[in-house]
Image (cartoon, rainbow, N blue to C red; front, side, top):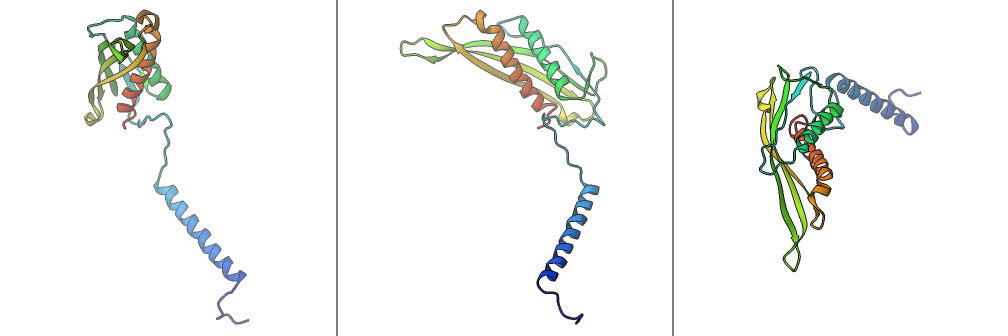
Length: 186
């Protein structure tokens, strides 16, 4: 057998396969040591080694038009969402790592989809919330921002008949927007 002769056919394929397997193993080993892949399906971008607590303040209604149950509906939705989607411990006041507080600044009705006889066929309920988010560990993450969401309903319906359902849906959307801008750290 001639040792200087290059492998051909099936023998050459095995050598290439061994080199490829070795390269993949070496690359996987380097990646395993140097990288950490992290998936967060809820959008939260929180380093739980740094952040442990959050305080959620009250959101009083400061709008011209007031619907008293809205405050409780919104606050409960915000607290529930944070509890379901983070491992942060909620505390009342005091020194927390993160803080969310604000006020409901708008609760307004406006006509939409005007018909040919100049009557609105839809009415829009818009809720606006001002949020102050404070990160005690990194002030560049602080936010003081206004969020707004709305739902349309048939103008033939009385607001009192659809108000609770609309407030729940709008609160869910507002909480999602607020979470993504603060704890989601988009």
